[in-house]
Length: 334
View 1 (cartoon, rainbow, N blue to C red):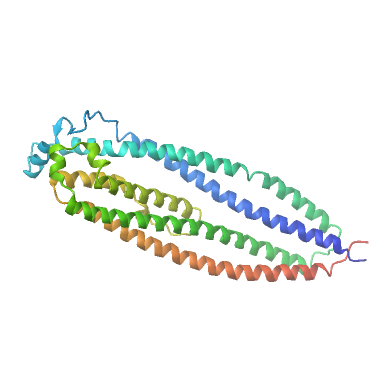
View 2: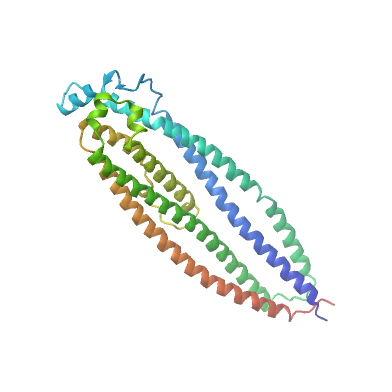
């Protein structure tokens, strides 16, 4: 019996290619999870859209046929005959419906993009099948009784490499989530600054007397608050789409609660009660505190995964060299 180093080198090349393919298949699984999440989120938004029917509010200086001044006066005077629910529902629909329609359009584009990326990974399934067949053929050329150390080490290496692949993708997801949570935190910080500015500089009474809904929701400091909160909510959803790809990340639903819907609800109360945006400030500060805690939590999770991945990398390198040493002891069949 004799050695054939060229066959051993070929076997090592096959296993390196298999390792690369396994990384791609792990990424494919993450993308499939993300597409499922995006489609589920889109379906929920479609059902929520029915809660905010399109409003015909004319020139935008009234709600349900009432002037802003009349609404505010009756609320402040605690008029028991005033039914707030239709007014609040109309205000929310005017604010929320365009937001939801825009998000649905963005989701359709993102689902298409991720699905197209996902389709490119199908080739790796066939490639893995071919490489495994090639590896079995190469191994059949060696004289193996079944108890060679190289076989046990190979099994251990495959298990370690799989864990390393998972951890590598976990780091990618956590890095992206951390970036998005950081962006959300920045948006919420800006939103808080705009709320504080509005409390001292925005004249609610002037808007009630002369303004239009578009002036409040888009062409004012309140519009800037809305933009910041929209950015914060969007980035939180992007962070969530990364974190759901992790098997054991403890997702807390309250950390990802929608922001825009309570914003419009509280804005209605703050404007027509003329409370200097106290409720709105409380909402933004509460969500900012949550984003800070979430950022710290993701950062700690990322550090723990990185440390584990470093340990797996060391074990992986050691096993790879041990496999090479043991393979060179093998002999070809007669």
